[in-house]
Image (tube, rainbow, N blue to C red):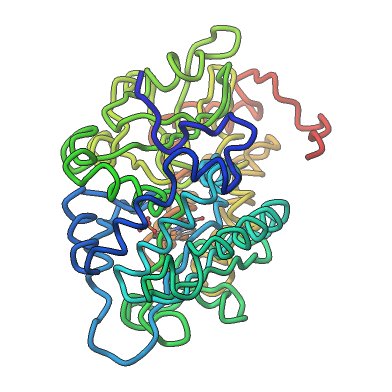
Length: 432
Ligand SMILES: Cc1cc2nc3c(=O)[nH]c(=O)nc-3n(C[C@H](O)[C@H](O)[C@H](O)COP(=O)(O)O)c2cc1C
């Protein structure tokens, strides 16, 4: 199995502390990076092939190079730690167990783009992490790794933790910027892109937690080492969140040549009660479902696109044969209905329609025309919103209809689910 890099020590109780991190070679890459020019750091990240781990897989070094060098405005780095996509819990692990890797990556990235301020935007529900992150930041500042004149180099870079109010849309990069500015987390029209007009109208890079945690690794081990991990153009260590009907749900680190089968059976222990798989969501709730005959697909950005889905936030949600696909689609749409920020009419109104129609089918009141109506509503949302939320919310509906239309039709015809799930809607939800 792959030798973990980002999560190597996470099970050791003191892993999150500054002492532990420094004892295991932490902040050495920062010393190296302080001796490099900003261009050399960006070039190393470009050569490593690192692609953003937040969802879209955009090349990180290229994104950094869009930040204009010659304008007299401050530049900012924002770390996207909003992590609210259903099934996604990898950044949480890094924030909780390896915060100094993130801080170190932030300072190196700031040096590359010419920023002296970095905001870590954490999701509203991460209040327990805010305290720990801030306490560790105090220690990093006192030790000279963050703040003014870092390690006597003359380089300044400070980091602040900002907790959102608990909204999925705040993870969209322009909505995140709006929220940081104290406004409602709603997306901006692009262009201009944040790299040119971002936080407070200044050039801004928004990067995911896991993306930035890879930066010290690239500086330490070299871009060639990094690029050699996994398939071409899909390089480096990757965290996968495996959940649903598996025996051992969790965060697993692997190279991106790993297959769905390996992640589900070798890492996550297989399916509960050794049942058959019915469907797999490979990259978080907004990515189309895959079928059991696609288990040998490579879990890389390009591998999953070729299979008709996406790597997204690498959240693999496994559903066994007892799962009703109508129920699954309704469950996901319930989330999107709750989280639509309301700015774009097709998304705001359309998601209510999707929910109501799915709910009607689930109650046994579905009509023959409902499937076409669902498809028509999706058609009126997809590509018609300011941000990709609209495309995200229709994916569960479109892909479950595409692969399980007969199940929808039987449900509508008989008024009850043809699948007998052991999920009971009236079961109390466990407190958390
Ligand atoms: C509705 C919505 C929610 C998102 N939530 C997150 C999130 O929680 N974390 C994240 O890193 N990216 C999220 N993204 C993607 C970001 O807009 C952005 O692409 C990402 O932070 C860029 O970082 P990267 O280049 O390092 O991947 C979201 C996008 C959308 C449309």
